[in-house]
Length: 323
Image 1 (tube, one colour):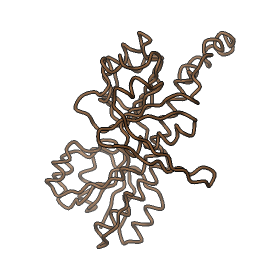
Image 2 (cartoon, helix red, strand yellow):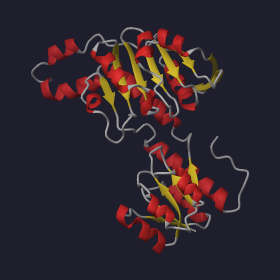
Image 3 (cartoon, one colour):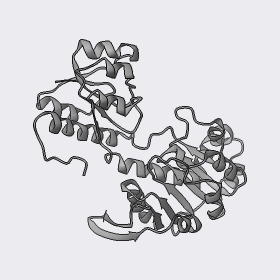
């Protein structure tokens, strides 16, 4: 079976596939030439991270059996259209859990100590107005002893909780589908288990100094004007899950009115062209949807996908690679 890797794959994953008898072609193919290349090379599987696969490619490649997706970028228009054409999807949904959780704290630290703002102004004014900037950026938030509220207590939310506990924060969480969790932590070769029970959304909003959203795709925003009104004055909020989890207009208004002290965003309601008001707001720490795109997470995703390809198409079974 010929497999096209469009955006790179770790050597470990490539070795797994080749040793199992697959022919791996690591080639960056131009979008306009993808359909012709797939058919000319009799490609039966694609592993993609960023390369978009048009519907035309899917409907005109009857030999195509699967698409492996590294990360959470949208690489096809319609899953149902692909499935109608007999194409399977292979992902590694848990491989990036730690990387996403760490980005949450990159935003929290950036917002609580004005790093995103200071990094803009120090190159411009640091030589002339050092003392003024020092005064301006003083009075940051010390995380120890503060309360982190997590909305969505799945694997990522639980990993965020572990990091927060390491900072000495109190953690509260809400999730209608999760009653609680026993967090397994390893600290200096010592194993620790901490149990947390979830509470209501209203309780989390009212009692958190910083809020983190870690939820799946929503039909409507979880955080709107009503929910923001319940939050503590000068609370911070970080969204690394889905852009539509927060009403962006309500967020901007709350930041401008100083109801919210800072925000951190990795996902946006309109990608890849986020609202200009978000991009220009100095109270928001911004990243371009990179939560799961560390080198380690990308390599891990590729290896999980490679193992699953072997399990599905090489006669092996009974292997759960997503635990």
